[in-house]
Length: 193
Picture (cartoon, rainbow, N blue to C red):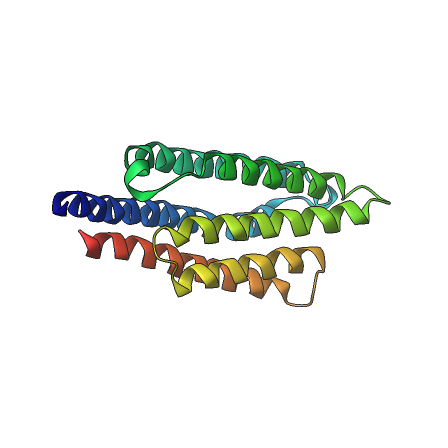
């Protein structure tokens, strides 16, 4: 009986490390996105600024790496799922479908006359990403910096929709918070070894 409890505790610790490491890499990756977009904006000729294609193409490596990080995490966690009660396959699949639907609505909502799609897509995408962060981080002991990440992401998404004066400063704040969150997550993994 004692060995089963020890095995469960080892599995929980390993799970927390795997998840925290994945979140750290995810946070650090996306902390650079607004900076990359800012550089792209500066380098883009004024006649092409309204074209969304360069910005959409910029997402491809970010989404590819994000998918890799979380698929790798899922693969590693499968060996512990019996011990920790990880039954998320359907839930994660649903979240991915909701994120994609929100993203498609965001893209389609930019067409004139489709503002409702933009608002719906923005709300769906933002809430789904926030929930996914919360859901994933809760298996690794949800931390205050996970909350900061969710809040800055939500604010930045809505600022993107409602351009405000000095909104660029908010994106910089988001990047700094995400760098801090990534560093904190990875530091926790290192300290736990």
